[in-house]
Image 1 (cartoon, one colour):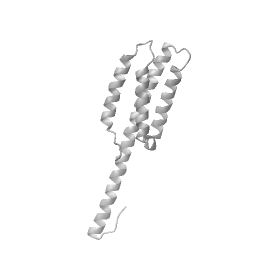
Image 2 (cartoon, one colour):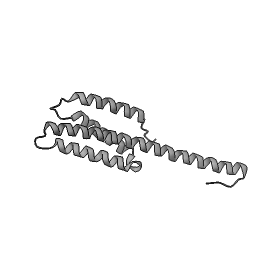
Image 3 (cartoon, helix red, strand yellow):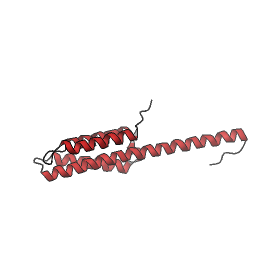
Length: 133
């Protein structure tokens, strides 16, 4: 059975975690919650094969996540590094969520086209009319 992702639930959970993540680390602390949320969102998007349908958004999400990780992995990250890393992690989360939404929309569109094609074939059989594209 295929795993289906409920976009509304993912977006709601991600937004709640982002809000909590903003509060969980103070201004001088590393944005670990935002980074974890971004890693989760990018992982979820990757598992849902969003990169097949939303390659650009997934590219941005991965790049932003990597940039945030690089900032935090410096020898002595500054307050400005933490702020920038938090922003990048949040952008990565949003881009991953967007990739999931685009992928779901394109999959739904493909399924609708398949249903329409099936209906045309059925009409052709029932009414003896040639199939129209």
